[in-house]
Image 1 (cartoon, helix red, strand yellow):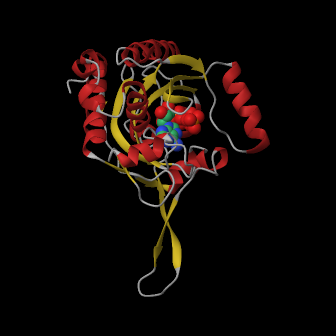
Image 2 (cartoon, helix red, strand yellow; image 1 turned 60 degrees about the vertical axis):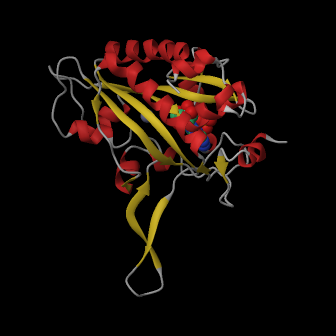
Length: 279
Ligand code: ATP
Ligand code: ZN
C-alpha cells in the first residue's frame, strides 16, 4: 500500500480531499509536538528570543523581500468578499510561505543590532506553499520551525554551519538515516535556474535529507548574506550591513521520516528514540 493511504488507514493523517492538506491524528500530533520540544531543548544554548507571527503576512512584505519574483508559483494570497457584493477582491494579505519572513522587518525596526547580533526562534509556524502533490512529504500547509541569526558575516556563517552539524546529530539521534547536502531553492523560470546554480556554487544553502518516499529535505539552512539586511536596512552596532541566515525544520516531514523508519505504530518504536523524544 502506498505510504499515504497507509497513513490515512492508521488514522495518522486525515484526508480532506485536497492533495497536500491533511488533518493530523493524535499519534502524529504527539510525535510532532515531542519533536518540537526536542528542538526547544537543542536551541536553549543559543538563548534565542521568541517571536511568533500569524500564518498571514502583509503581501507587501513578500513583494519587498523578492518572494513574488523568485517563487510566484508557490504564493498564496488572500481574497475576500466585499460586504454584500458577490465579488471577491484581493486583500493586503498573503499566506506566510516561510516562518522567517516577518522577523527581518521587525528586527530592522528596532535600529542597529546589539554587539552579538540577534537570534530569533519563530516556534512552529503554519506556512503555505502552492505545490499540490500526492507525495505525502510535499504538503501545501505545514509547520516550519525556524531559528534566525542576524549579525556580522562571520558570526552568521559559523552559526549556520554549526547548526547544520548539530541538526544532523539530532536527527541521527532519532535513528534517521540523515545526510547533509548542498541545496538550492526552487526559483521560478529560466533566470531561476541561474539563481539556483549560483546559490549551489556558493554553498549558501544546506539541506538535511532523510528517506520518506525518496530522500527528502527535512531541514534546511539558508545563508542570505546581505539580502534581507539591504531590503530592510538592518545594521550592525558600529555601522555596516548585517548578514542573516535561517534554519528551518519541516515538522511534518520529520514525523513522516520517523514513521517510515520505525513503523506506523509509535508504541513499539525503539526505546532510545522514544526516550530521546520523551514520548
Ligand atoms: P523542497 O526543496 O523539498 O521544496 P525547500 O528547499 O523549498 O524544500 P525550504 O524553503 O528551505 O525548503 O523550507 C524549510 C523546510 O520546510 C524544508 O527543509 C522542509 O523540511 C520543509 N518543507 C518545504 N517545503 C515543504 C512541503 N511542500 N511540504 C512539507 N514540508 C516542506
Ligand atoms: Zn527562513
